[in-house]
Amino acid sequence: MKTFVLLGGYGGAGQELSRLLLRETDAELVLAGRDLAKAARLAAVLSDEHPGRVRAAWADAGDSGSLAAVLRGAALLVDLTPGGGHVGGLARAALDAGADYLDIHFQMGALEQLLPLAQDFERAGRLLLTQAGCHPGLPATLVRAAAPFFDEYRSALVGMGLSMRVGNETTALELVDELMTAEGTIYADGAWRKAGNRDMRALDLGPRFGVRQCFPMRMAELESLPDALGLRECGVLVAGFNPVADWFVLPLILLCGRLGLIRLRPLLARLFTWSINTFSKDAPGMSFALAATGARQGTPASLRLVVDHPSPYALTAIPVAACLRQYLAGGLCAPGLRFMGQVADPRRLLDDMARMGVRVDWSPQPD
Image (tube, rainbow, N blue to C red; front, side, top):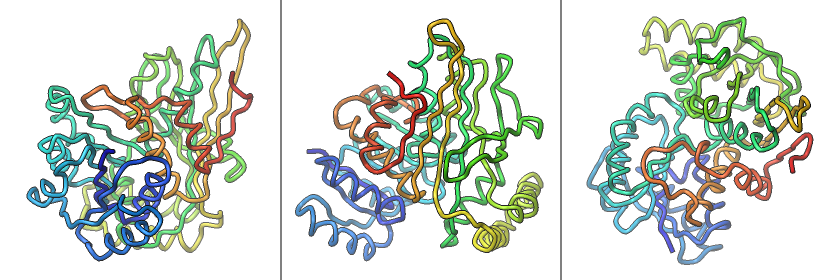
């Protein structure tokens, strides 16, 4: 039986993941973080249902001594901390402890901290698994899942819709940080290029959001897929929130990011929170929709694949739990730096997600 250390395991996604791992695997869990009282309360609740499999521990992402202590004997460190600022140190602590590492961070800065450690993990035979979860995580999974349907795979565009209420400052600051550094890319004509307004598309995001105007966003997990799958067009396109956020607040955040006005982050976070919580009318939820085209048995063919859940926290945690089922079964054994969306078996991941409560709709049904 393996031990997983969930750093930040008592947060929104962490609580969901803790429950899923106890239900779906035989792993033992250590819920760790700076707020030992919160970790202990959650561990006590979970221990009532799963005696002897979960405990709490104090650990600080910036304190190497506390990390070494909590990782002693662990197989895997799951980084659920906000922001991604300590990614490099956490991955190094896992490596020093002889453990594998997984995170759910989407920030490009987090990935840049991991790149210098890739060879060290590979030499040690340890897995450095990044960008697990849904955003990123699911876009590459969906693109790969559709590939067996086609004899010739031509286009794969993933649309994303998100409706949420921002309940705390940390969440708002994370979103502002992402938006301040956001860049859009699209793959067309044999190369990735910077996206502009001409690349906006009206995409059907499924029943929750319907048809929305979406703008391309860069996701590193997709960048090797066109060459690997023979695609002529590929990208992730994200829908907006509401007219006030889309036409006033988000452009202001982007402008401040280009001007380097980092000191305005708290003000921008409050403004973003106000615009989302006041003007968003959609019920909370998150959807990903793949529109794929190509040829099958010599004739043009298309495939739609929609993944949807009413809770963004749950849709972050469920793919991680499904991925870790593959990890425990020995399906993610290649060492070094890997993206979840590129190495997890996509069909098995989606099947497990559907069993865990995610709506996964294929049209037409694949073989």
